[in-house]
Amino acid sequence: MDLATLLGMIVSFGLIGAALAGGGSPGTFIDSASMLIVFGGTIGATLTHYPLGTVLSVGKVIRKTLIGKTPSTTGILEQFMDFANRARREGILSLEPVINGLTDPYLKKGMQLTVDGLEPESIQAIMEAEISSVESRHETGIELMNALAAYAPALGMIGTVIGLVQMLKTMSDPSTIGPAMAVALITTFYGAVLANLVFLPMVGKLKHRSKEEIHIMEMQMEGVLGISRGENPRIIEEKLSSFQPPKERKPT
Image (cartoon, rainbow, N blue to C red):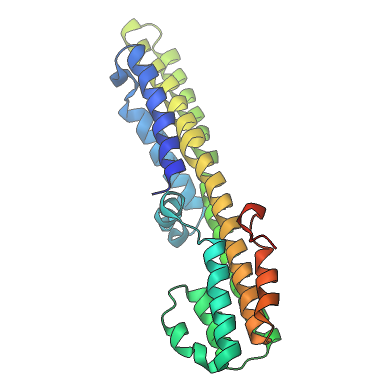
């Protein structure tokens, strides 16, 4: 679980819950009609916007904001230094047993292509195509969450209009004004909370995760290309250290 995401959710919903409890019964803000309009309408509009498969992938998108973990650049640098030194001492084929133990499919593919003897230009083209594919998938996930963030408050406004129409139609009966006004206001509340405390923060987290993942993939590609070209381990180290934040770089 990503600690920042967890803390953000606890703080935002905790403070809103405390504010609701301090102003009276929190149950006042529970309305089934408003939930149907906002939650059901948002899902329905999203299904109209995207193919079913894309909408069903929303669970994976949300999980990425909660559980995603980026490898350490220091660990990657150390890993490639081991690869480079081993290849220099024992030859590129000595990396074959090491590759079988790799769990990162992108890195494993790049190293396997290197051991197979492909030209560096071909390896680079294949690995760049993989990066482009990952960026495209990330962009789809971000667009999906942006769509949810747009539809939720819009459906809240639709619920508000419905509630106001119901209220105006029954002005002669004072007992119906309260429930109709509740639907009018609570739907706006639901839509605003979903958009601003759930979907939009997730969009920001997904963009950050995407940049981190692409950065790591580009670092790995540079390391793979260095080994495929037979570069000196010291040169590979210098190239890969440029991907590290200054505070993580070894002093020269």
